[in-house]
Amino acid sequence: MSDLNVLFVSIDSLRRDMLGAYDTPFDWVADFDVATPNLDRFADRAITFETHYAGSLPCMPARREWDTGIQEFLWRGWGPLEAYDTTLAEKARNAGVLTKLLTDHFHLFQHGSSGYYEDYHGFEFVRGHEDDLWKTAPYDPDPDLLRQVGYDLDGERDETTAEVTDAAANPNHVLDPYDLQHYRPRWKYVRNVAGFDDDDETDFFAAKVFSRAAEWLDANTEWPQWLLRVDEFDVHEPFHCPEPYASMYTDEDPRDPDLPVWPYYGRVDRGQAKLTDRELAFVRSQFAGKVTMVDTWLGELFDALDRNDLWEETAVVVTADHGFLLGEHGWVGKMSPDFDLVARTPLFVWHPDSPRLGETVEALTSAVDLHATVLEMLTEDAGDAPHSRSLLPLIEGETTQHREKALYGWWHSDINVTDGTHTYMVPIQEDVPLYNYSTTQMSAQSPFTPTSGYDNPEAGAFLPYTDVPVWRQRYPSASLLSEPRLYDTDADPAQSRDLIDKAPEKRSELGTLLRKALDELAAPDEAYEQYGVSQ
Image 1 (cartoon, rainbow, N blue to C red):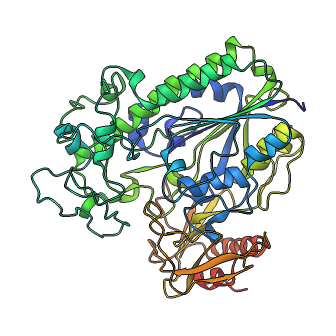
Image 2 (cartoon, rainbow, N blue to C red):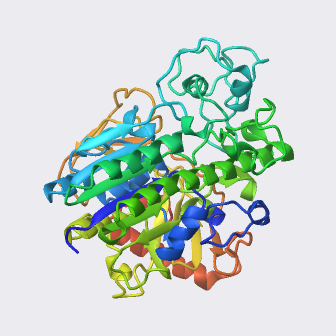
Image 3 (spheres, rainbow, N blue to C red):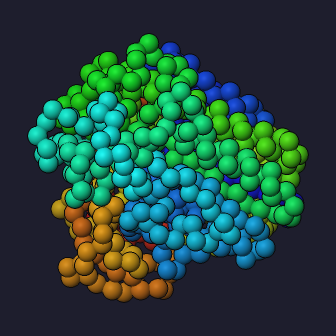
C-alpha cells in the first residue's frame, strides 16, 4: 500500500514489564497490577515484538537512531543531528508525505540537541516538563513540591547535593531554589507547573500531547498521506502525577513532602540516591500511576483513529526509548549496567495488510530498525540508512528471522550484545583512549551546557558511513561494571544469576558475536581495545 499513513508514537522510559502484553520477572510489578487497558487492547490487535532492544542510549541517542538509521553510540554521545544526516522527516517530505511532530520532549530544543524538528512540515511543543527552561515565576515556588523533587530546604544554600558515588551524579542539582548559575536546576519543574491543578489531569503533559495529536488527526483527514510523530516525554521523571493516578497504587498521601517524586540516579542503598523502603515503594507507585495516565490519554489518540476510520489506511508504531530501574539490581534510574529493564523495550506495530496481526514475533530486533521500517511503510523503499533493517519482511509474514545479534550501550561506557536468549555485558577499559566524533564541537559529557572550545581537536574523515570530515576529541570513559557479566534471559528474565564463570562456551559465542558486530559496523579501532576484542 503506497499511500499508507504512519502514526509513530514513542513513550519515554516506558517499562515493558508493566504492560499486559509482556511478562514481569518482578513480584512487585505483578502486585501493582498496573492498568494499561488501551495498550493491552492495541497489543491484542497489533503485532507484539517480544525481543526488541534499544541500541544507543539514552534519550537523544535513541532518537537519532530512529531519525537517521545510524547506531551512534560507538562514535559519539548525546548530541545534535549531524550535517550529513538525512532524517526520516526529510525523506518522507521528499516523497510527498505531510509530516508533523507533536511533543513535550524538551531535550529536542535545548543545549546539546538541534535539528530534530526542523524537517517536519509542522511541529508543536508542549512546554514545561522536567527542567524545561520555561517559567521563572512564581519567585517563591511550592516548598512541598520542592522537597518532593529533591531539595533539602533545611540545608545550606549553594551547597551541591551531588555526591559522586557509583552513579554519574549531576552537579547541577543544587539545594538552592533561587540558584541562577546552573542550566538544569530542578526548581524549573516546580515553577513550570505552579499553575497546574493536581485534581485536573488535563493540566498535565500526557493529556496535552495526546489530546492535541487526536485533534490533529481530526483536522488533517484531507491530506492524501501523512507521518504523525508523537514523542511523549512521560513516563519520564519527575513522577509527579495528578489524581486519580497519584493515589491509584498507594495508600500514602501523594503530596507528603517527605515522599520523593524525582529520585536521583544511583544506588538505592547509599549516597545521593539512597531511598528508604517507604520512599522506594512510593516512587514505584507514582511511576505506575504515570504509566496508567499515559495509557489513558493514548486511548484518546486511538479513539481519533476510530472516529476518522483511519485504521485501514494507517500503520501504527508504539515503542519506548528505554526503561527505568526502580530498585531492581539495587539501582534507580537508567545510568546503570544495561539490564533488560532498561534495554529491552516494548514494540507494537499495527499494519492493516499484515497477516500476523494479533501475533507475537520472537525474532530479535533493534531500535535502529524503526527508521527503515517507517520509511518503507511510507514509500515502499527502506532507503540506505547505514545500520537500519526494515521489519516489514517480519510484519508481512515473509520471514520469521531478523537479526543474529543486537548491540546496545552508552557512548563512553560499557557495551552489551544479545543473541535474543542471552545477554553479555562487557566493561569499558578506562585506560584506553575514548573519542567523540561529530561535525559539531559538542560538550559530549555535559550536553546541557554551552559548548566550549576543544583542546587539541583533530579533524578528518574518520567515520565509515560518511566522507564528511568530523571533529575527533578525546574524553574520559566511565565503567559501571567491574567484570563482564552473562545472563540467560530466557531462563532468568530478572537477570539475577550471572553465568560468566559457569557457561564458558556461551561466553565465547557471545564474544564472537560482539566482535562480528563491531566488524560489521566498522567500529573505530579504539573500540576493540576498549572492550578487549581482538581485531
